[in-house]
Length: 353
Length: 85
Image 1 (tube, one colour):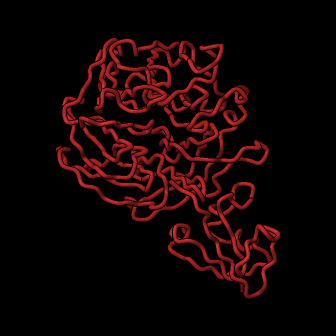
Image 2 (spheres, each protein chain N blue to C red):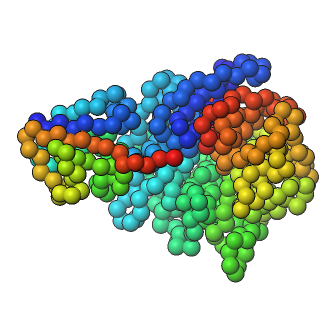
Image 3 (cartoon, chains in turn orange, purple):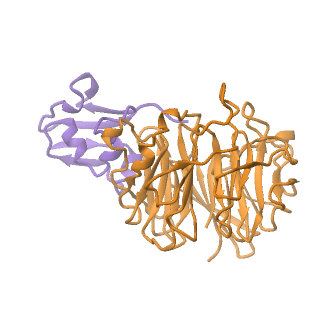
């Protein structure tokens, strides 16, 4: 199948289709017009498209399409139980479940909630253990409003999951979501007034698990880039190793090489734009010990910004979407980039499908 | 039968249907019977903050809200508040 970049934007979903060589791309869409598509993904198990779509007026929805987006079906009854005294404010991320559970998917949302479906997305049930987590009262909403944006499932064990919430931190489950433990040791929360290394409250911007070495996790945080080699028990900070700042959102990995990662640093929390007036993607090939700026094919001058879902990877390519409406793709590890789409609405998310 | 008219974005979520004939005694009953009720009402069954409902030209919030009575020929018009970005 030809590659597609699913591009969630502030004004609907676009499908950017490439040729087999991934050198020529065409924009299709928009679909789900009027909806802010925070994230869209193709379920690799059955090809269904899933989208987390939000609207200022009509709220948070999960939508799915079995015909490449020609028609969409909205999930039933997405919301939080009355006894929680919380209301669902946004749907953020859809994650297809483990290969052994073909009808199971997960949906992350705000305020810091996780849903599970076991019927392919027709109905969703909130995860009670996270909803009622004893540390919840210590979670502090940021601009993202306590969004559960990262959901990673160990390909070797469906019950092992890692999620991240801004600004609550990373949580790990070893029992399929029956319980969750904070795993933020060594991760800074510099914005806290006193304790800079609390149990919870870290502002994870993106968390990824390496599919071939699932004990290895990477995160781009509000306060640094980190790697863990023990499923989040301990974290090593990596952003003093050549990155121009500790701040950024997007993160991508190489499924064939657990030592490689890509990030897009921004100047800092108070000026969320790529530094030096250009869009630079930074790559490590040595587990974060050193980083190299990649810029061939990326615009200059440019004051770009890439959101937390604005970076994606598959086994051949990395895609980066900007708030200025461009999508850049590399298929040589970042040595060269092609602008696959431009002049789209602000890009909220990309996925390679 | 009362008639409910919904905006095009909501209609698109109902297969394009913009006009619904409903047998309902109140605004709440009328909205709850629609296939897109979840877009107009939140998980508590309350009218979403930025959804406005007019019954024969009168804002239902200035009446009894979802309990506002509907006459047999009432026209219920759903209009989005000015919002966006």
